[in-house]
Length: 240
Ligand code: GLP
View 1 (tube, protein in one colour):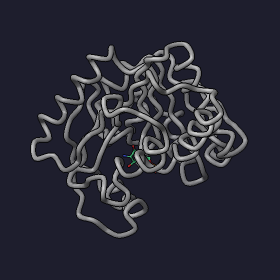
View 2 (cartoon, protein in one colour):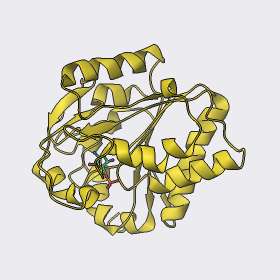
View 3 (cartoon, helix red, strand yellow):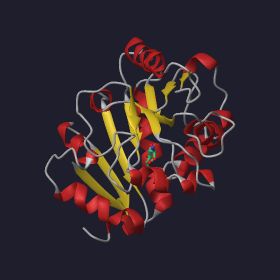
């Protein structure tokens, strides 16, 4: 796993955004996946700015969601859909067919998984995926103990994930399952970027980098990818 440490969150966001822009410059119809959560919010801002300045063209790109809380929809504050739409998709001019995102309100999660898997394979796989890392090392909703050979699937959420979720929802919500791209799909992406920001992520960043591949820290499963790039700001690198 290559690691790059940058000064602060704005520098981290700019660097990750530039990698997405580079992908689209090389391949205008690339399939891009960017995590929900707090970490990529600066990337979304940087990409929207770049689009307004004519530095990137999203008109041929396609996007797929990484994960979603089962039972939450776009009207639910803190759902992945609400976050990614609010901070990114709604600020660009995109057509419906450019976006494939998990519907957390689906009554048929297995079918929803197949729909997303089909979208990814019809687009030739993910070109660039931008991931955050959970406090327990989860990637998307691939929780501790995750298998490496999964495509989209339904996940029972770890207790850490359930307690951390309050920061998105502003209140405790009874969300016990998620739906997520699996490690097989993530590892099949041509370019994998993991980003971490802030001192609160320092411990899991250090554990991920020091540990061998070990499913109890799902982020270490990314070491199976030949060129995974981890980008962290200085506060997240304090224990390295
Ligand atoms: C969340 C999401 C992930 C996200 C990770 C880190 O629970 N399921 O997609 O990347 O945990 O979140 P954050 O960036 O808010 O720390």
